[in-house]
Length: 427
Image 1 (cartoon, helix red, strand yellow):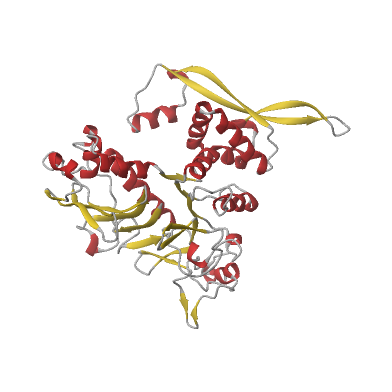
Image 2: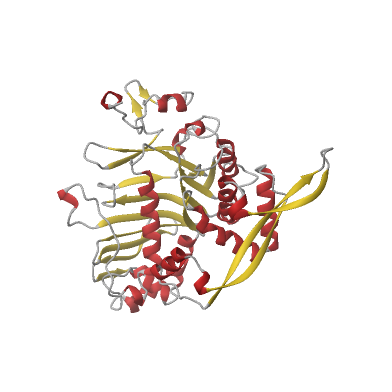
């Protein structure tokens, strides 16, 4: 369960900003959109981020993706001599020589953790891990470059204080050597998936792999597609061996870039959707197969590709962060996905969805609470600010829960919209 994520001096984020999934004591949609994480803490099941193009919405997802990837890969020997692929805020002299900042606060196996690090292109400056076993937060470890402080409950880390490279995370190193607490933390990060709605084809293989591993998962995907009402009655997964020279050049280049081994042969998985065929009286006469890649709509292909991550997240109570969720999807389909996460029946495991959107039709008090709606907006110096609707204050005071969120947003009352200078048009 994600409580909050903070980032600073990274891409368009200059000063640290915090994105929170903590439910405020508002009493709005409490039966559906929030869940009880602890006796004193309620969390949100979903949150949406709005903002103009280039406002920094996508940078929040990039920040999470970078931190997650760095946690998993920094201890690998292949990274020993490489620079850390970090991009700090470049529009200020104040941030030029300062490290980027990342911190996650979350609950895993009923224990609250706070983990973060500061890093530049050459080294990890600081790294910390705290936990709250009862009431008070306690230290597991804290690091200042090559100096380490190890808490009594993190003895697993002591042997590795002198074996951690300056460009590697201590947590990653300890987990690599099977430290039980470190492994727990990495297990939580594995449950935090970050995907892009603009590049959903790369998740198709994930969905197909899940289907191959579990036939029950196929039934769940099929039911998901049927509810979405896109006309698919069934689908077949067909496999064919392809030689390396038959692979698209772009795929080979991507594999090389990702340091993936190039096999002599690969198994190509083709998915064919099955639709009913009708006679002149409107009765089903037979069924017809369509190739997903070439004969289905872009929206259908996207929905199938993301069905795996979505169903996996819902089933196991994971976290899914998705940039551009509504790209190539009808608003009713996007609304359907949101309702899945805000449902007590479909989301009994309290999975969490975080997504970015331009579709103001979701901005309704029947769909979202005020604390579920976030806005990204750049200031005059090019730095992104992030704020929720419940935090936003107009001259007359806070935003009322019965306000017309969608109308007021498009009118610019909450900011985070394009400032189009029509008088400058040359035609």
